[in-house]
Length: 114
Image 1 (tube, rainbow, N blue to C red):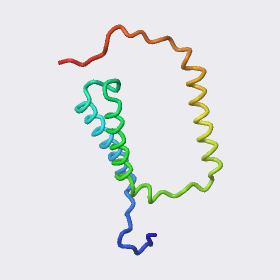
Image 2: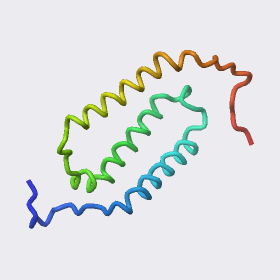
Image 3: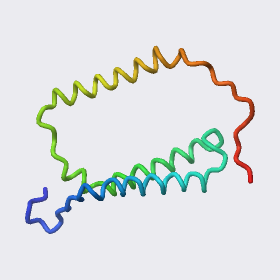
Image 4: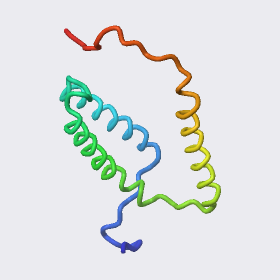
């Protein structure tokens, strides 16, 4: 357990640095995907899954100071209500609205060639 005077205390990251850090990680993972995987998800699903697991671990490690400084919500009932309502909205959209969209007709295989 860390105390306030602990030499191993993790300092919290100022909020102004969090958004650029998110953007940098997102851009790096996106560029890495397009550099390493030219075939798409269908050709190498296991390698791509491992690639994104790597980025998940790296992101969790990068934001550990934000996680440790996070203060739990006081009104948990409101938080759970909002989360449940949002999840229900997503499920309802996927179940009832999305099927009414017109079917996608693929005319040719999308491949970026130089």
